[in-house]
Structures are given as C-alpha cells and as structure tokens.
Image 1 (cartoon, helix red, strand yellow):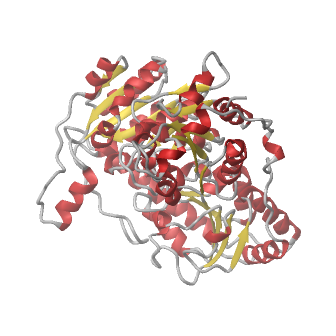
Image 2 (tube, one colour):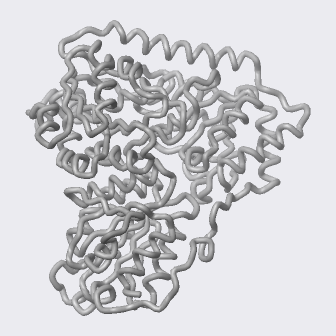
Image 3 (cartoon, one colour):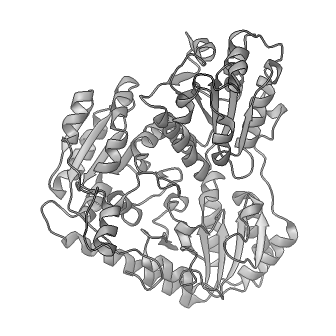
Length: 556
C-alpha cells in the first residue's frame, strides 16, 4: 500500500478513531487517506497547540492512546506546549510529523528544523524514519513506548519523500503481536509481605492515591484496602477523582490549593501508602512540614525511577496500582492479627473532615458585587451531573475548585498536571468530551486563560462538541497580581486585563452565551447550558481574590 495509507491503517489497528491536527503539504499523503472513511475522524482546530491539548484531554478521559498529525517546521513545533502537558500528565499521545524531504533536512531547507531533538525532552520516545520500510515498525515502537510503564507521548518524524513517492510491502499487524496488551505488572512478593506487615502494625495509616490509581482503574481496590486496614484516604494533588469524595475515610486533597486539614492528616500519619503516587512537589511541597520525616512510606509506582525519588521509602514496590492493591489486601487478610489502626485515628479523620467542611460552608456568607469566586462552586455543585468531566485551567479562580467541587468517579477531573501552562483548559475540555462522549463536560478557566485559546470556539461549533465552558472573569492574571501585591509593593505591571463580554463572543462564534451576576443564577445557567446540546460559554464576573499559599499543616 502507499506509505500514507500504511500510517492510517497502523493507527486504526491501534484503535485510534480520532486524529488531531492541521493539514499541510507534508501531511496530505496521510490525511487524504481519510477521505470517505467513518471509522477514523480528523479533528482540525485553529492552531496546532490546541490539537495537542485536545489529544491530551481525549487520552486522559478515554484511557486510550490518540494521535496528532502536523506538517513540517512551525506546524509541528506549535504542538510543543501541549505535548509537554502530555509528558507531565503521562498521556499516550503519538505525534506524527510530516517532515521536509530528506535531501533538505541538513541543508537549512524551508521549514527544516531538527524536530527530533526539539521533541526529545518532552516525549518518552522520539525517532526519525529514514527508510519507507521502517515506517510501520517505528510506529509500533512509538505505541509500545507510549503505553509502557508510566505512559507518555511519543514522536515520529516521517520525511515527505517517504510518504509521497513510496509504497510499503509490510502487513499491518495487530497490537498484541508487537506489545503487551492488558498486562498488569505485579509487585514483588517479598516486598508485598513487608509492606503488609508495616500496614498491619500502623496506628495512623493513610492511603495517598495518585494518578496511577486512575490509570489502572484501581479506585475500588484502593477503597477496599483502606477500609480493611483503617486507613485515611487522601488523593494526591489534582487527582481528587481517584477516590469517591463522599467516602467516610476521605479527607481531601493536599497541595497549594488543597486543604490544610488534609496536610495535617498526612503529617500525623505514621505509615503512608503512596499508591500510584509520585509524591510530587504539587502534593507535598517536598517539605517536612507536610510529610513527617518519622513517617514510614510504602511507595507503589509502575515506574521504578519514581520509587524513593522524592522521599526515602520503607518499602518500594514497582507495579501496577490495581494489581499491587489487590496483592496487599490479600496479604493483610492472611494476617489474622492485622489491626485496623487506632480507633482514635478514625475519630481524628472524622474531626478533620468535619473541620474542612465547616470552613468551606462558612464561605456561603461571603458577600460582594461582583461576587467572591468562592461563592461560585457551591452553586455549581447543585447543577453538575454526578459523572460530569471537569477541566480546570491554571490560575487562582479555577484553582479554588480543588477544595470546593466533589468527584465520585474516576476520569472526571483534568488539569495542567504540574506543567502549569495557562490556557489549556478550554481545549483539554473539548478533548475530554470527544474521548468520552457519553459524559457531560465542563471547563473552568479565568478570563486570562480563556482568551489564550478562545478561537477554538470555532472548532467546537464546526465539530459540534457540546462543551460547557465557565469563565470566571476577575479582569486580571490573578496569581501574578497576588505575587506583585504581596512581594513587590503592589507595583502592578501586565496583570490587569480588559476583556470583551465572553457570552457575546460565544454568540459571535455560533455558540450559546450566558452572563451571570448573582450566585442564585448559576445553577439555572449551568443547567440550561447543558440542555442546549451544543457548545456554550457562561461568564461570571468575580472579585479579585488573593489567597495565601497553603504549605504546611498549620497553614490556612
């Protein structure tokens, strides 16, 4: 078959049904092979960065790999920020870059760049194809790498002359013939036994569920393990959906925008089971005031390099979070003398949870015109469907959601994954809706972040993607203004913004627009936006809010 067709058939064999990208001269040999097909869809945003963001959201929401396809030079380089997000967020996004012909690569030809070395730092695999016979095997290598261990993006560059003028006499093989499919890495039995013994003897055990719990569909197993061993349940930063938030053992999420009560519980624990958790800076600030140096840590991660990377461990277990959780539960059940922690620990968990809830409930009394941003989330909660997928952009106003929204099911919270890039929220939200179309999808962003990619409203309308977007308009870059206020004597530069009416902007693009000024209007607007069945934007003017950073257990 023609080389371009071989690329498409290889993607389809991997179950790829969406490709995100923008066409160009070097990709036409591939994208034209999609003509007339209904089994694979080409989604073309208005900028390549949006393609990468959408692919990230799609992969995280669906749990499946997806692909970006872009043209040479700036077309592919524009993916970089979004692929860096996929790298931080461990999403299996395979980039297929149509490159300039081989004879121009080393001669400073038009749009000729060293794409391979540009993408190496933000991918787990990067390779340039040099012969037509290696196109399919290299794609196999890319998918193998993207779906191995902790997962992540991969890059394949294919020169135009290999695509335009060549045919391939290599059969398209099923994935199970060249990579493990549905395999779970079990933990070492000796390490499992030592960890179980440590958990059985703990008085104040705590299970900290990380992104690996979501990736391996281990939420139910984590809860069963915590219930059996009397462990408090916490979710690592931005993985609130790893644990049902209504569970009696759940105390919240730590981190800068997390709950001080959760930090206090982590500090008080005598044994922490970090299940599928990297113990990242976002979760612990790498500070002894969060994780007590006396606390014994059992760390479980699919990536061996993460074990003990940020904190010394009592037991390190390399393995899949679901498989290891089941092994630990079985080992604890075999230890008939295994305790369930100190009964006082359960009361302490309940007390900390009650304190957190009371603190947040007090925010219902906040007054102001425009409203304080904290007032948005209790009203939003009233209208959000239980299985709604929520994407949070970077920024102060969206960040308030980490403590104030509730999540009961995995793959319902998506964010900037430690990358911190402003503007990803809207496009990632579009990707989540395509990746899991049966669930409602909401993106929350500030005014600064929304205008980064608001042109993708056109993409939502053209492709009929019914994402509801909530814009909290505080007319500033909140995080930066807070820093200039607190650390630079209120010398404000580049932080105050003038904006259009976002609801009117949505209408210009052909989407629904809503403008809300009172808390009691929020639930009705959200309900109406979801019922509209198409893309919608809800603008809520809010007051500036500069919260102090939350670090240790004594912070507020």
